[in-house]
Amino acid sequence: MSRRSKFAGLAGALKERAGTPTPAKKKLAKSQDKENYKQTTAYIHISVYNPLQTALAEAKTEYSQLVEDLLKEWLEGRKG
Image (cartoon, rainbow, N blue to C red):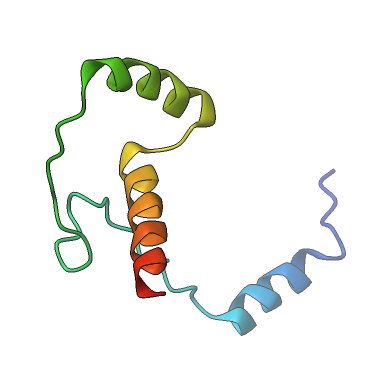
């Protein structure tokens, strides 16, 4: 004996009313987003590089985000 939920029809009606959801736009990786990001190269002394990698891993921060944040701060300081 199969019993149908009294809310089964309601769920279907709500789905119809909501319509088909539009898929969320997939965010591009920085390396693929040529419109908003530019690749650069920096040479960092090995005495800084190794501890930096450890600190970034611990903070779960991307190197590019750290550099971008520091550069924005530096640029803002130069406006003064």
